[in-house]
Image 1 (cartoon, rainbow, N blue to C red):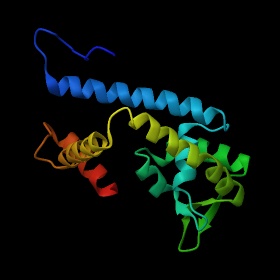
Image 2 (image 1 turned 90 degrees about the vertical axis):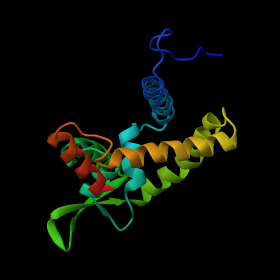
Image 3 (image 1 turned 180 degrees about the horizontal axis):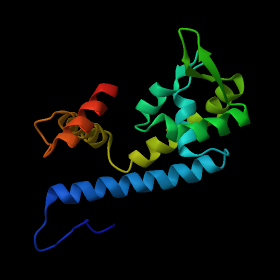
Image 4 (image 1 turned 60 degrees about the vertical axis):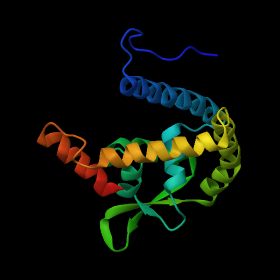
Length: 171
């Protein structure tokens, strides 16, 4: 068993230790997902875009909001998925300035072939703790996430307040 993560064994700060553990777990999940998706010639961002795209099309701005990044960060990733034949760009009939990201039949098939294994691997990794603990973890993380959305938790300056406000608007 791995030793408990401690920043300073003489003066443990549970909040900082929890933060450090969240970062380490996120890093580990990213590594494992990257390895799994490499077998399918996909990156994590490519897989995320495929998961958000629909056959009817979704504005790139919606996908970027769900992925917590700017549209400009996704342009090259979308280009690579278009070249692989998994998605298409379409002008939005209601607003020609907006591109819709449409999942192609090949992209839908790619997702059908990957999702069951991906979900199974995530479930297997989460089973390292019991089902009740997974539910508790989910509830605690949701409470933390919700708490970070409110301005009373932070911020120390106007820029942080604006950042949190913009993120809350994309939820």
